[in-house]
Length: 274
Image (cartoon, rainbow, N blue to C red; front, top):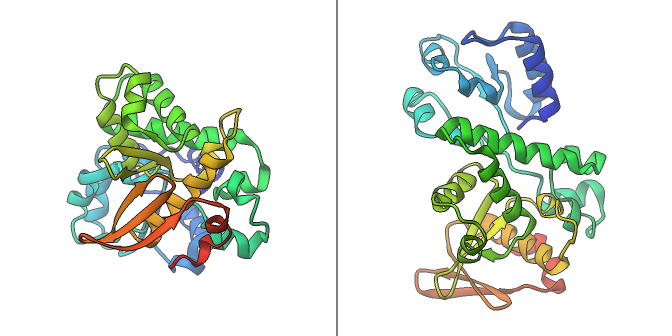
């Protein structure tokens, strides 16, 4: 929900230490998010989840509005929801969609390679994507008390660079005892998602095509499949989605309601699936 550079700027100036954010920071945040979310009382960068009592401080406050931000806020998980019971509304802010990219930039071919992270779209600097992934994995390690950051980061980097691999393929390449937990954590942090094939094998995709381009050898077919998979997951999230050879199958219960091919024609019309 916020560019990493701005969050770092705020963190460099204000030392949290379980303290409520100063009014000056709220004013900056309000100027940025006023149009989309309205006015609010607290602006909370994602690094506050390192503090042990900030949720309690907020719950006891009489102020009504707050905006908690970060590149992977969902890793806060049950603790956040429990301590702020009935006092929060989740807002999921994903990378900009294919159709939004088309409306703003007008080049349908670029999105296949750039994805939807605004800062990367503007700079074309892969270090931006690398840092987003790096910081997200760092937060996962903090949240779940994972000691081996490098192991999880290498796994996540390989998955996002190679969309379309099955979990079984990944397990053959990485000798990691907790690999199923790691993959679950990456899903919770909105870095990857999975779709089962008709045989029950889980296929892994990245939430954004920009991540897939962190590799040196870009596979256009893989990027196309990843982009179509993400669009389908967005449009048909309440349906059962399966992959069969070169198509995605959309089911409601046991009934197949749609079959979407993975090809250039589908890619060119992806924003009008639904």
